[in-house]
Image (cartoon, rainbow, N blue to C red):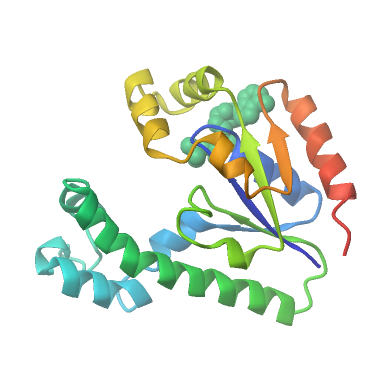
Amino acid sequence: MKTIGLTGGIGSGKSTVSKILATLGAHIIDADIVGHEIYLPGKAAWKQVTEAFGREIVAGDQTIDRKKLGAIVFSSPDVLARLNAIVHPIMFEEIRQRIQAKRAEGFPAPIVVEAAILIEANWLPLADTVWVVEADKDTAIRRVAEQRGMSAADAEARIANQLSNGERRKHAQVVIHNNGSLQALEQQIQQAWDQLGE
Ligand code: ATP
């Protein structure tokens, strides 16, 4: 049974697609949630990240202060790359183990790995098939503005920092077009789901 790698740009509709896939019976692994969990005290990334970036990023309750860490790493692409080099392989291994554990307990349906950075973080080997969700830039910006109140300038800066839809598409077995209604999205997901195979 397949593992679907689900990716796409900011506001493209990944979480919405995951919710639809969950209603069809898939198990969802959200890389954002895994990313938060590995930073907890005692977890895999905690030691390596605090060793690399210093005790000043540790809050009073021993958790990593993500705001402080963010301020350090977003100051320079090299520093961010250093953090990613630590964290991305740890997340890969964590997600791999979660997939394996779900299969070991006999879960019979597809598993979805929802990850904005599936391609950038070199996590493609986790997936048997890659689904890319695409929305036009203006549509994505409008949606994240409505949903989170993110300014158009911030959303645009994020988009400029991510892979383009064209680059993502090179890795995709399925491209989901999400400029229309939720109903149109559901129809595409149902169709791709029906064609998944074993
Ligand atoms: P991010 O990468 O920023 O987490 P995402 O790719 O997960 O975003 P979603 O959160 O699924 O994107 O979608 C962004 C917003 O757009 C949400 O508020 C969602 O409800 C809305 N949305 C997604 N698809 C549609 C659609 N087809 N019609 C209307 N609203 C939509």
